[in-house]
Amino acid sequence: MGHDKESSTPRDFEAALKRSEHLLSLVLNTLPVAVQVMDRNGNIILSNPACRKIWGKVVKRGRRRYDSVQAYWVDTDELVQPEEWASTRARLSGEITLGQLIDIRAFDGRVRTILNSSVPIIDEGDIIGAVVVNEDVTDRRLLERRATQAQRLEAVGLLAGGVAHDFNNLLTVISGCAELLDLEVRGDSRNLVKEIRAAAESAGALTKQLLTFSRQSILQPKILEVNTLLSVSEKMLRRFVEDNIQISLALEPDAGHVKVDPSEFDQMLLNLVMNARDAMPSGGEITISTSRYPEGRV
Image 1 (cartoon, rainbow, N blue to C red):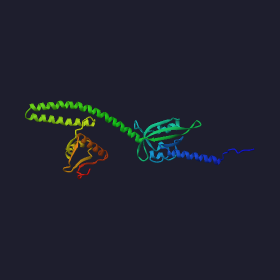
Image 2 (cartoon, one colour):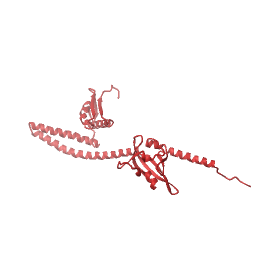
Image 3 (cartoon, helix red, strand yellow):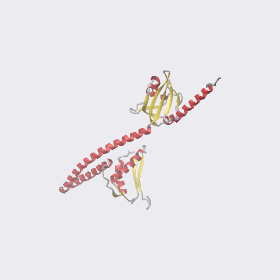
Image 4 (cartoon, rainbow, N blue to C red):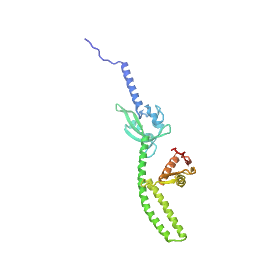
């Protein structure tokens, strides 16, 4: 008796090869990271669609990657030289690089931060190329920078609060002495004492702003005329903008009153003006206006 034996024909091998190629293509197209395969000479022979998202366009096959892009070391801002690319070290010396942080200038002009990894492709002991994987971490780095900046601002705020408290103690002594002098002196000397007291009051307002910045002051809301607040704050705001930016007020007469802490009001205005300033690097005009809404509208 005989029996059938499983056999594979060339057509079966061809079908299996196509399935493998299709699976590889699906995997590459699905990956959220950029993948490029290079030959021994550094020519790109395979890349996936995620490359477009990072590099701004599909990197052409056959093009030596480092001949057409720019990258910079994050810690030094120095240009990455061709021999310093992780892919170069991988395909020439078999070096493995994982998670190398670099800034790149993409083909569309954007500056991105990527994690660059590369491993050699070894066939029967010989290096025949390299695989490069890039992960875009631009947004992550931005969040890290913002977190670091927030920590620095918190530290500055604590320092400012401590300095403001100490300075306030000195101002208390100066103001007290000035009041005593005001009771003793006569004539023109009293005008000098008034200037001392006025300067001490102005310095006290500055220390209060420092305490507000450090979030250590107690809010003291008052009912104040909004146009007066803006007029007083205008001079302070001008210190925070460049000469090519004008600040103008468009105040409606009898715009009304607001209940607000003056220092908090100044801080709110300053934040708005600084945001507007950052949005017009070439200069322009910032207009602060007031108006009354019809009664019953919010």
